[in-house]
Amino acid sequence: MSDAPLLQVIIAGTSRKTGAEIKKLSDLPASIFQISRSDAWNLTISPDAARNMRDLASQIGAGMPKYLIAPEVSLLLSYIDDLNIRMYFETLWNTGARLNEALALKP
Image (cartoon, rainbow, N blue to C red; front, side):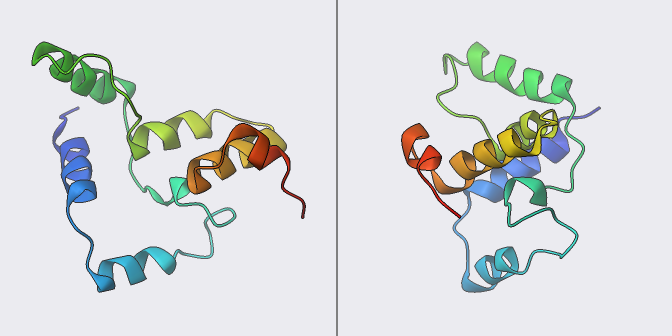
């Protein structure tokens, strides 16, 4: 699989968002579970493509990544079967809350 789709997502994510693009983000389809930006990626990300991107970064001297890109987070979250645990990690990812802040949330 080519890294081109992954590169397009990375480049698109780094550009400045216009008002119309931000509006599109708030109009997620009803089929998406909960209100989750991490599930909004309609891409099939191969682990090989992500690994190739990380290898390329290390070859140019970028060192270890300080963050995960959104498709990588989406892929990681897709492996969590327990909905309570998944909701906790989705909350951490989507809000940027600290661990104890997310645990203290009440419905």
